[in-house]
Image (cartoon, rainbow over all chains, first blue to last red; front, side, top):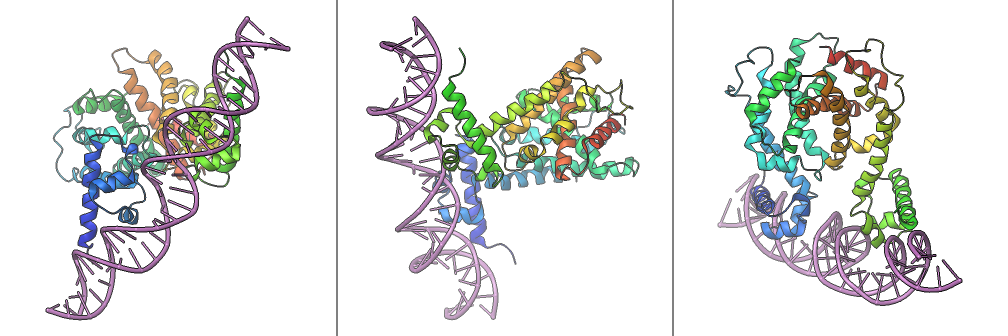
Length: 183
Length: 183
DNA sequence: ATATTTAATGAACAAGTGTACAATAAAAGT
DNA sequence: ACTTTTATTGTACACTTGTTCATTAAATAT
């Protein structure tokens, strides 16, 4: 059975209202009450679907990360020439993705937000690397640990990128990563 | 001028009450009201010092991380023999530190907690690496980016360690890190 | 078209939040 | 010891939170 039209209608209204409010104020200053007023949705209805505003945002985050996953379907155009074979381009699309959704990732990387958002990103990158790594290394190595190590290294660059207010281009971040991988 | 005795008294009472409550329930289920009742501190006084329960925990986290920083004063006894010179032992004390405060780090790495705790840890490790890295590499390299990259790689292991319920020993984590560094 | 299922609504409730301010009490300075 | 400074307390207020439940309305199924 498909989802009830009313459900998708209210979820859409809430998402829309959240995005509008985020233009004016920070995520954790948005109350359930004002969100529901903006969305013209009953407060009880909100609680039926999400428990807190953070969960609504997480819902939206998942759709954005779906776009990251999807990007691996099409060929990648941004790999610097020096890359080619050593570094699997798979690991490197993340920076263009973050650049594309920059206003969004300013929130994801902000201090007051729950750690769960970071974990969503971590999971995604770790899984991408897991697929890649399991082919290239011996089987006696702990794949979970190695992929966690490599995935989070990349996210470390993303964190620093955010801290420097995204002043570098995604291209530059790619080149940085390639350089560090060859150290 | 030193801090007022009354201030340290109330802060101590609040910290003590928080630690007791954390034995029974999760951080974000602890209300300001019940915390203040347990600490026998007026609710208004709490708001004068911290704005939310999370900030009180952060305060405590800082003292624990001070212990990590201090550990670099004394010689390190846990370095596997294979390490010696390639890997600076500086980077590797983190796992014994986390092991020592394990119940605490279960909270720090839990999903609902603010990202700021992770950043505190990240800052600490990044700075330790910065000091080390600035000696060993060319000056044309972006030290902030490289240290962010390396620091977060290590924290990636910590995240995965937490996810696997800390089943490995700190020694094992050290060996894993050494191995990954030589790949 | 109609009946059935199920989601959204509105109202109401106890509890917690965040803030303000005058009154009190405890440190610090002399 | 006494005065001054400053933190804590108690009370109050408007507001938000999270939950419940009967009522209404919209979508699905026949």
